[in-house]
Length: 365
Image 1 (cartoon, rainbow, N blue to C red):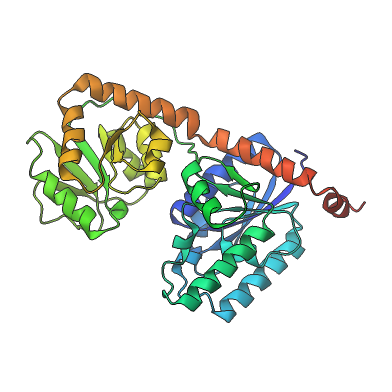
Image 2: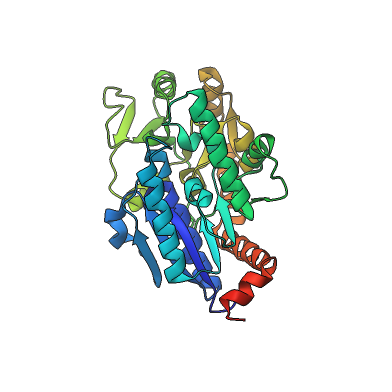
C-alpha cells in the first residue's frame, strides 16, 4: 500500500475498544507506510498514555456509544457530525474505519467500513424499551449499514445474527481480533484459577462463583482480579487488585486456568491463552467457534457442570498440560495482531479498488 495512504479511524480511548485499536494500528504500522488519525471517544484524559508513534489522536470529549443515554440527543448528533466533517476535511483520508454506529450513520461520501462487536443492538442497552425507541434504533442501524461498504465482525456467530436482522450478507467480513503481547513460554501446572471480576456481568455469575468455591478441593486457589472487593467476604476466593495491564498479565502468567462465566469473546481470554492458561468457558456457540475442542466447555449457569470441568483438569495434570498447549497454539495462530492487520490492509485495498473515481479525485486526477 502506498506511503500516501491515509486512514481515519474512530475509537474509544479506554477499555477493550482501545485495546483493539492499539493492537490493530501498531501492527498495521509494522506492515505498511500508513498514516493514521484517530477520532477518540470516552475517556480522553488519558490520551498521553496511548503509546502509538506517528499517530494523531483527536479527543472528542464525547461519551462513547455505550455511555450515551438517548439516541435523540440532537446536540450530541450535531457535534458528532461536525467533528466527522472537520476531520474528513482536514485529514482527507482514503478510507474511514468506523468503530461507532452513530458515526457511520452520518458519514460523508467516503469509502467506509464499520466494525461492530456481537449483537449490535446491545450498544444501545441504556436506551428505554419503548416501541418508538426500538424503531428509531432500527433506522439508525440501517443507515449505518447502508453507508458502510463493508461490515467487519469478530466472529461467524455474531455475523450470522446480523444477517438474520438485515439484508447485508454480501457486505460482511469476519476478522478475528488479535493480540501482540509476548507469549509465555513456561507452563504453570498449579491449581490456581484466575477470574476477571468485571467479566461477571450478572448477579448469578457472582453467585455461581461463590457456590462452587466451597465445593472445590482445598488445594485449589480461586483468584479474582477485583479492585472493587466484590468477593472480600469469601475466604475461599482471593481478591487481587491491579493498576495496569502488566499486573493483569502477571496474574494470568502465575495461574493455570482462566475461568470465564460469560458467553462472549474478550481480549482477556485470548491474553490468558497467550500466557499459558487453560480455558474453562461457557458452552455457547461463540465459544465453540473460537476455541472448539481446545477449551473445556461447561453448561451455562450449571454449577455441577462447571465443577466437573475444573476437577477434570486439576486432577489430571497431563490433561491440564494438553489443554494449556492447545489453547496457546490456537491463540498464537488465529488470534494474533499481525494476521488481523494483514486482513484489514487487504480489505482496505479491495474497498479502494471499488472506488476508482474517488481515488482519482483524492489524487487530483
